[in-house]
Amino acid sequence: MDQSLLIVIGLLLVLMVMGSPVIFAIGFAGMAYFVIKPGMAGMLDIYAHKFFTGMDVFIWLSIPLFIIAGEIMTAIGMTDRLVNLSRLMVGRLRGGLAYVNVVGSMMFSGVSGSALADISALGPVEIKMMEKDGYRKDFAAALTVSSAIQGPIIPPSIPLIIFSALTNTSVAALFLAGAVPGMMLGVAQMAVVFYLARKKGFPRNPIEGLTLGVAFHIFMSAFWAIFMPLIILGGIISGIFTATEAAAIAVAYALLVGVLAYRNLSLKAFWDIIDRAARTSASVYLIVGFATIISWVLANERVPSELQALVQDLQLEPWTLLLLLNLFFLINGLWIGDSVQLLLFAPLFTPLLAAMGVDPVHFGVIMVLNVMIGLMTPPYGLALYLGSTISGVPLGAIVRQSVPFLLSNLAVLLVVTYVPAISLTLPRWFGFL
Image (cartoon, rainbow, N blue to C red; front, side, top):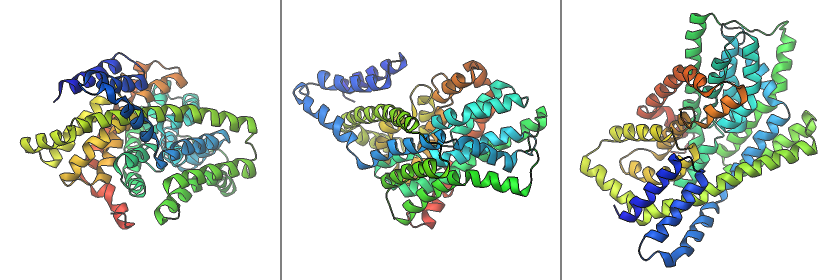
C-alpha cells in the first residue's frame, strides 16, 4: 500500500479519535492526499470536482424530504397517537409500557426512517410515561435507545437510501429486504422485555374505560401515520414513482394531514421544520461530498483490487469474510457514525462480496444493521448520548441497562447474516431479484 495512502488513513483515524468533527476530519484527510502524494498538488481541481459530483445525485434529494415529512408528522402530534395505538395493542400485557416503547418505535419507523428522530420524538413521551408507571428511568431511556434502531431498517429508511445511491442497488429491493429484519429486532427486544417483566414484576398499563368505540377512535386518530408508509412503499414497489418522488409525496401527504385532517400545523411550526431539516441535510451533504473524495482516493490507489487479491490469497469463504466485516463494522461503530461508515465502506466492500456470490441487497441490510447497532455502543454511540440528553440520566447508567437489548440485537444480526432468505425472500416475491 502506498505510503501517502497510509498517512491519509492514519490522519483520518487520529482526527476522529481526537473527537474532531467528522466533516472536518474527512475533508482534511482528503485534502492531505493531494498535498502528500507526489504529482497530485497540481490536480486540486479533482478535489472540488469530486466534492460536488458526490452530492449531485438525484436520490440524495430524498433525504431532506423524508426528514421534513417525519418532522411534520411529529409536529402535528402523531407521536402521541402512535403511543396510544401501541397501548391499545400491548398495554394490557405485563410490562405493558415497555412493549409500547418497542411497538411505538416500530410504527414510527414508517414515518421518520431515522433512529435519532425516533428518540427525539418518542423518547420524551415514552420515558415520562414509563417513569410515572414505576419503571426505572435509566431502564426506560435504555429501552428507548434500543428500540429506536429499528427505524432505519424498517422502510422507509434513510441509511438504505444512502447504501442504494453508493452501490447502485435497487431502493425498492432494499426497502423490502429491510422489513423482516427490522421487525425481528423489535420481536427480539420484546422477548427481552417479556423475560424482565416476569423477573421484575413490571406493571400492566391497559387503557382505562376501553370500549369498542374508544378503540376505534384511537385507531382512526393514528390511521394517517400508518397509511403513510403504505403509500410510500406501494408506490415504489409498483413502479409508480421513484424513492425521491416518494419522499416528495410523503411531504405533501404530511402537509395535507397537518392542514386538513388535524388542522394544527402553523406557518411558524412549518418554518421551524424547514430550518431543522436544512441544518441536518447540510451536514449530511457535506459528509457525502468529502466521503466521495476519500472513496476516489481509495479507488485511485487500487485498494478494492488489492483487497480482492488479499481475500483470494487468504482463501476466505464468504461466511468468514461476513463475520470479519461484522466485527469490523461493530468495532468502527464505537467511534464512527452510521452515515460515515456507509459512505466510506459500502462502495469498498460491496463489489468484493458480490464477486464472492453475496447479494448486494443482502449485504446492504447486514451493513445497515451493523451501523445501527453502533449507534447504541459506547463511547461514541450517538443514540446513547441523545437518550442521556432527553432523559437526564447519566450515560453509564443507560449503557448498563442497554446490555440485554444490545445482545438481542447482535443475535438478530447473526441470524440475518447467515440466513439470506430473511432479507431476500420479499424482494424475490416482488420480482426485484
